[in-house]
Structures are given as structure tokens and as C-alpha cells.
Image 1 (cartoon, rainbow, N blue to C red):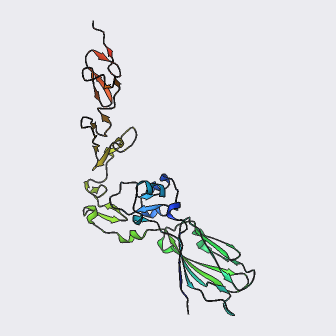
Image 2 (cartoon, helix red, strand yellow):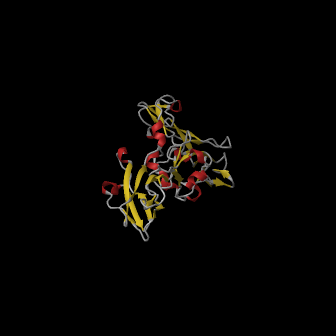
Length: 307
């Protein structure tokens, strides 16, 4: 009769992940995100574009609820582990594992034979996805590549004893896709009824765009990207349906304006603390002083000669 034992092992704790922000930020889908070791996918609704795949550092900075972070961990479940006897020389006999790309997992095999060692006779096509190493009775398995064909997500390994004719049968499932991808909702309310909601992201139907498919059009136009820096609304506004909405200042007299929020009336040069020397000398327009008649200079400090 089979004896079933469950063992859940996280290779690294949440608090020890120290990837830089950019290591994870480059990924725009949950599928790609979890194929980078120690990256988390943020399942929270209405997250700004480009910031769902997080490192531990960025997750802490954004104060993301840990329960909203999808971070599949390595797991081993012992399916058959009969005690050593006159007929059973090694234990366990059958193992099921779920392994994430780039996160190695090690376990020990017990042998009745002294000085026994274990080896993998042949991996065949499995070698392109898994790397297996053995040292005496210690076995280490690591996913080195994710298959493009989902049917190859389950791999089988036999680990042979060098002194007996018995082996450990290991079935490995490669954690290369997100469980939330199977729960996609078409024409979801989160997407204003105009897109498929999957892993916290709206994939808009043709003719709609925006983070919640709230905008009309074939795609999000580049109308919000500042030509000089390619920054969204000069980093001083939000892009709403392809149009920049500039931030409001605490001082109501200070305005950010322009198609890309590139202009303002408060960052010009000053003279004795006054913008452009004061209203009698000049006016701040798009970050530069427009001097009044009779004045010149970067802060309108120089009088013009009268002929």
C-alpha cells in the first residue's frame, strides 16, 4: 500500500529576494514574468502598465499586498515511500515535483546498501528542459528551459541505484505558465465589457484600448510620448485615451501645460526671487522668460538701450 507524504519547500523566502527593479520590469505578461527566477506577478486590479512584474525591492516600494503577488514555489510530494526491507532497498520510490525555471531543488535518497550512489542513465529529450546532477545519495534537479509546447510541461526521470536494480521514479511538472491564465474572462466588467481579463490585465477587443479598454481606436497612439525623451507626458501627467492630462500643482497659480505637459509657468530664471524679474519685466512661458518691452536677458534683468 502506498504511503503518501506531502512536503512543500520554498527555495527562497519572500524577504530574501533582491533582484533589481529592471530585472523583472521588462516582462509584460505573467507567463514571461515567472520564467525569471524570483520575480512576482502583481494580480491587483488597475495597476499602471509596465509595473506588474516585480522584484522584491519594487514590491516593497509599492507596498503591494503579498496576497496579490503570484510567485509559484518549488514543491515535492512523495507518492510512494515504503520502508527499507529485504525487497525494498531504496526509499522513496516515487516522487512528484513542481519546479520553477532557474530555481534548483535538492533531495536525498535513502539506500539499504552501504556506499550506494545514484545516477540518471539517460534523460533523452528531457535534457533540454532539465539538468540533473547526483552526488552519492543526493540528487539535484533544475529547470533550465521552458517548453513552447504546453504538452511537454510534464517530464519523467528515473534515478538508478548503482548497487541494486531499483530506481526512484520522479515526475516533474515545469512551472512555466500562470494558473490565472486559465481563468480568463471574456468581455469582463473590469474591461468595460470590451476585453478579456486575464491575470489582472485587460486584453482589449479590436477598436478599444486603454488599461481598462475605456478608449476608442485600434491601438493606443503615441500622442502621449514626449518626442525628445519618449517619456509619457514628460513624466508630469497621465495619458488618458492617448491625450495627456497634466498634473495639478498645489499652488493654483502654477500651471503645467502643453501637448506633452512639457511647459510650465514656474520654472523660469528668477531675479531677486521673482520669476523673470517680476510681472513688470517679463512673464514665464513654457519654462523661458518672455521679456516685456525694454528688458532682455534670461531673467529679464538687462534694460535695453533707448535710442
